[in-house]
Image 1 (cartoon, helix red, strand yellow):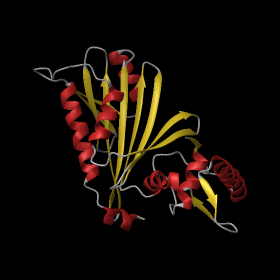
Image 2 (cartoon, rainbow, N blue to C red):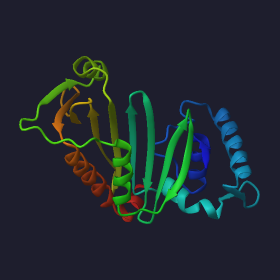
Image 3 (spheres, rainbow, N blue to C red):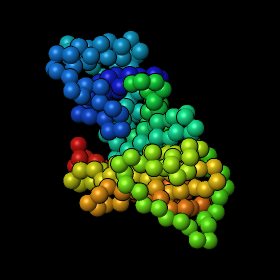
Length: 242
């Protein structure tokens, strides 16, 4: 079902969450009165859609059909955000994972998302979905893989100057629950039409990124490792965070 970002935040709030990672905050920078106006409008819309049900004066509950999905949205043990640009066609999806299920929020327009629940919980289905989005052509690691280090500032222009317009670029950002907060990690992919590159950030005084030539199978292995680390987050760690 389609929801606005404000509706997703209201749903998550009814389920006990204070924020939603991976979804742009629709209330950021607003004063209290405009926020309350938007919350009331979102709540009315959710009641009309059947996603919320009234439970007395100024009390609401998530409708039973949406509870499992909203629980993943509100209290994930890990979150993965994927952005993809394939020759100008852009895709953005956020996956909220618990020990029982995964919820997917796919950006369908400015501030609008398609929310649905997935039954996968061991990570294999999530890897398959992302691999299908990437649709990497079969490539092998070169005998002498090239490495390039570029400053993060102006990276888009630097990449276009070196490779021309990429056929596909994708970024993955993950957040895994830990006892004292969230552990974040990232991964980037670049397909030029003739070569596949893995992109990762380098720490230092000057923010840089490192591009390394790689192969399609190796990128899937990297993806499996990343999702596997997310799966190691425990419900107890999530409880400590929330």
